[in-house]
Image 1 (cartoon, protein in one colour):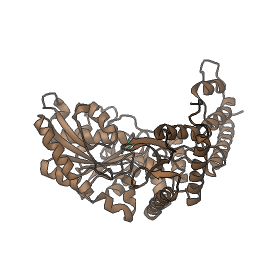
Image 2 (cartoon, helix red, strand yellow):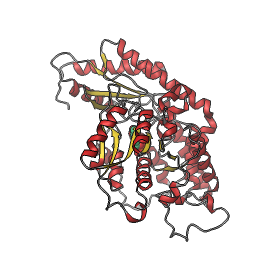
Image 3 (tube, protein in one colour):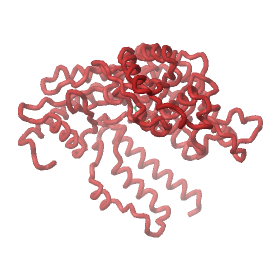
Image 4 (tube, helix red, strand yellow):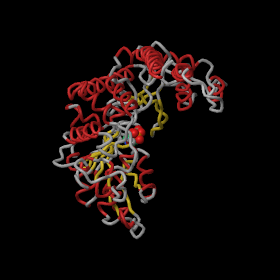
Length: 478
Ligand SMILES: Cc1ncc(COP(=O)(O)O)c(C=O)c1O
């Protein structure tokens, strides 16, 4: 066969396979996962690369095998982590990204994607209330937090870019005790050290408040540390709580600290007029992480860091010794590479731009509002059910609950086992976290295609599976 007919045949076959896999995922017809242990999977799939090349024959065959064992993250019973759902326009954008394979460092090699990224950053900035700003796409929410910490460090300790920070006292950054672990990684990477991350206690709704920040600051100063940053979380990973951003803004202003808002999980709630009050005080922050690969259902990775100072990213990140890539010419002001920690960088703008074009501001606002409604609906179902208990007052889109066990049974163990049973049987994927009152099943509402009926099915199935597990529990199968 000629090259082009081979390509056409392979693409047509693969697209057909992908579409039928998507259909059985989106309708919930197929199990959410065909769970296998690593040993079973290794046996079933021959993953070794030591044979001779299989050529075109392998493409459809390997596609089939991969899809058969892939977790169906767009399935109505996938309620597990902070990404999922299916977004057609974004999916097409992702396919185009792979087809056109280029790098974001210069305008020259990625002209349209560069302008799209700039459009996205401007669009997102328009939600912050800032009069100026800049931003860029990065490799995940964790890395937006890392870059925010780097900019905070360099903005307060001028010269740190060239001289490092070894001459400084021990630095401190304040975060909620429920902040994401990426703050610890960021502190490790930026030379602050994980012990420089001061975890501030939260209130009963999981929110970091101004008073607790002031207490933490006094203790930190007593220890001889030098605070330089506070990070509010807009949507904590476990409970979806929003720190009091305005109180953190007051605190940051009083003590001349950089204020970062980590909206990696909840940032997209800003798209809904209804939820905007959660972001009160964001207009006074210095930087904001917004992660469309979570709540905007864009395929991973799609993450944006927004920064109020329009110049600081280029000034504090760029290094000027790469004239083999960056040439002075008519388009060099449009090169995004100097403001990025990466050299080669994939196109993440196209898929988000296409999705935003498809849904529009109103469409995205409606999707967020629907999810907010579903979180209330799920919470009410739990409260009304005699068999389930709510583990945390629902804040946004994380619903924490568990099955109520009869006396004498270890509830944490039972619910953890129940979760694994659901996965092994391919019925649902839902995660858990440990809260002050024990192990909690953490139901995440982020797939806007879900309906109340999907949730009814989920809860009926959850209770029925728990009742089956209860018979003769604990069983030796674990
Ligand atoms: C609050 C918060 N910040 C940061 C992150 C990290 O985001 P990513 O997984 O995109 O690195 C997460 C991920 O769950 C998160 O919930």
